[in-house]
Length: 417
Ligand SMILES: *Cc1c(COP(=O)(O)O)cnc(C)c1O
Image 1 (cartoon, rainbow, N blue to C red):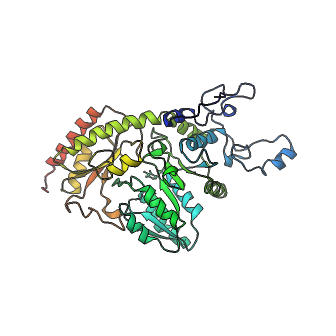
Image 2: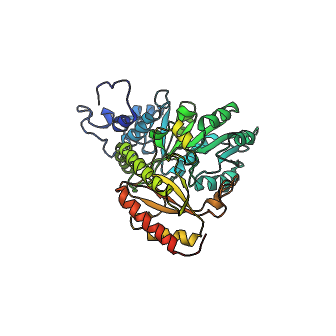
Image 3: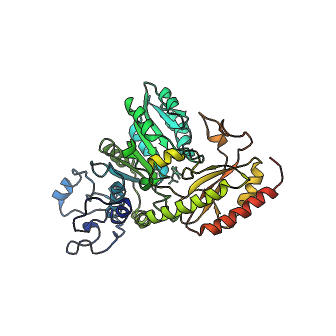
């Protein structure tokens, strides 16, 4: 990796070469000798003498040995690889901080921006723990949160008040998958001096260039696509030079650090992320198309599917998708929906997503709404229950056969719409 890189490098190539600095993957006399950085397990970092000890802490810069809490090459390589994936961060002196979970990354971004007396605007389709964090904890610090309709930029503009300091976007949103008009919302936000935080877990930088579309801080749960194997928890926040130093300061003050073992697993996952996402997207699209033709299904909430809500914005702004989408069933109750889920043999039932294996969870967003209601006004009031699917790397024909068995169980569960 010591050779100079060609100027234009595509994202699928950047996930392969990012963070592989020769000094992190070899020895002083054989730099770059191995492909991946070893797991640098270290709490203590040693100094040559007292003079070096004295001058060491004064240089609080990325990529410098100091003490384990500021990481070592395994974590630095992962952070650098993620920064290189985010257009607008790498070129301008921004960077990426790593956190022990996606929720920790969201909390860190909010705490870097908000102070007592501030108002936070949050999209109404935000990940449930983001909502709970705001209601149950930010409120105790005197930070008020107001929710707005993800599909209504005008409502967002009206919701801004003199104390509004930040907005948390999520696109597509959790469960209901609304795509937000991020450039428009960011332009409105910046006119009022707000910091735009985007939860970009669904698309990752491969599918949506968050900073280039107006976000100031892009947050990801690395637990999902980057890890990719359902065996680690981690989060990241990437920002340009305006916010990165503040994120870094906050992480150091709050003692946020990730283990080198997990960073090594995340780096391994990252290297195959582009091919996994491409395959998941292809399979998810095929399965979403199949659902769209089924009489048991009222709505397919999959932005990648032509005709699905948010598809036009997705086509305009995104460069990729993933395997996560939702399906709303045609009437009936939660018990019938549960019969569908319990009949599936190839889908694990559990939280999280973005792993190599397919997962399913019940979908009933009615209780997680503040500014909007579920079912949405344009929907039939009886169409409330559904499923959320995370499509993995299996053969999609097998998954479709399994889902057909599930729909048969739903039909057999009685109770007419
Ligand atoms: C899972 C998830 C998170 C939280 O990530 P964890 O790593 O589980 O803490 C945040 N945002 C979205 C959209 C998620 O799906």
